[in-house]
Image (cartoon, rainbow, N blue to C red; front, side, top):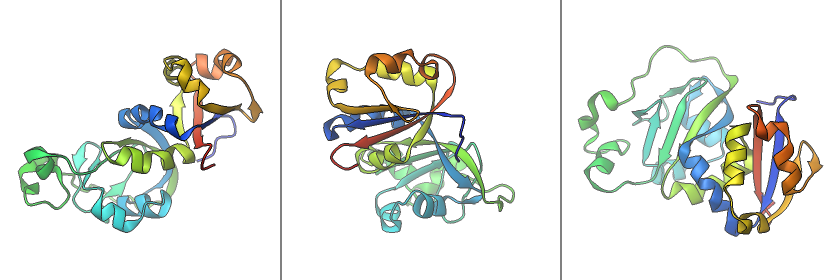
Length: 205
């Protein structure tokens, strides 16, 4: 969902530095999408994740903190929280696995579809990625872009060591190339405004 008044930051990073952003994806980031559709459609048609990857690699799915067994029937609402994970070890992992033998043990933790979400409309959802999905899906979401609170983003960037910025070949703020010092002066990072962050890899622009 495009917002012409939203500040935009594009960082071009060395491939070795992309993993520095995975902590944001694990904590949860806000991403644009069209809601009122099945979760499976969101994953494949909108976010470009291959259907066989969803089946084979995304073994644990939570929608609004409840486990999902069938992504083709679970409907996504605006403001929803979606958590995706690969296989987790132990009984907990087996219990949370989609369609697994122990799924019945979840009880109230299993998502139950409520109401009719047939309207396909632009909105935002909060996405969380875990374990092996971070390096496999993380770069794609960073490249497509995510929305962050300006203060949260500023705190994240200020916490990074010099080596992080040495791996950054370009900083573009609202269409203008800036250096690190100028970036930190902008109100969009020091205040509470919304910033649309895009991170591209210089080896794969």
